[in-house]
Length: 142
Image 1 (cartoon, rainbow, N blue to C red):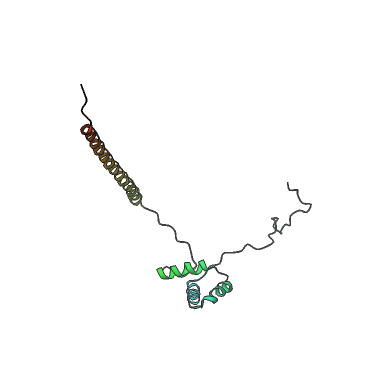
Image 2: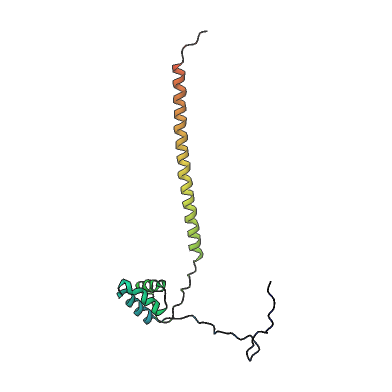
């Protein structure tokens, strides 16, 4: 259990608690910076790639993402903003549902056909065994 401290929290001139550190802001990178860094990273020898990332304070995932964006032609100007996922139309949703249903029914049909094939073979085997036992029986005395 915690106990309240004897000292009241520090207050700024506005009456709210003083923030000891300014809130960090998210860094944004221009397209030119991204392209230049990707080119530098790709041209660096294997031992130097980590040094570039440490110098810039980046992760390899940044470079990978920027490389893919460059290769796809999506590396536009301005800060990187996450792409908004496209909404599927009702027709697309219905089409996906029907395709899943079709795949399930096709699978069920294949299983049913396989089971019927096995049943037919088992029936034929039992008839053959039944016929052979009737012929192999010795005559009974009356």
